[in-house]
Amino acid sequence: SRISGLRGQGLQLWDISIVKQVPLNGRVRAQVNVEFLNAFNHPVYNNPGTDPTAADFAKVTSQNNLPRDIQIAAKIVF
Image (cartoon, rainbow, N blue to C red; front, top):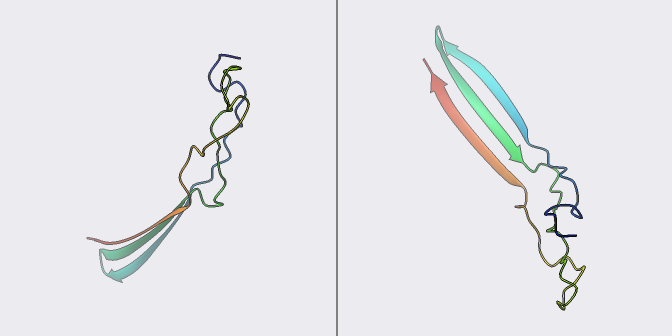
């Protein structure tokens, strides 16, 4: 019961990236990136308490990951 992560849940995080390139003029092109980190907003909880003398024994009291994050970027490549 003292091994870290033994009783925790598995990770189910999905990171999705969409990239679109648009030619502008000759060798010049625009690039638009959209990234979804933790795209499906799946929570990952901390491991339950393993100290039998503590009040929070076998309870999960907090979340271990961040919520969904969306990043948008644009650049011109020449």
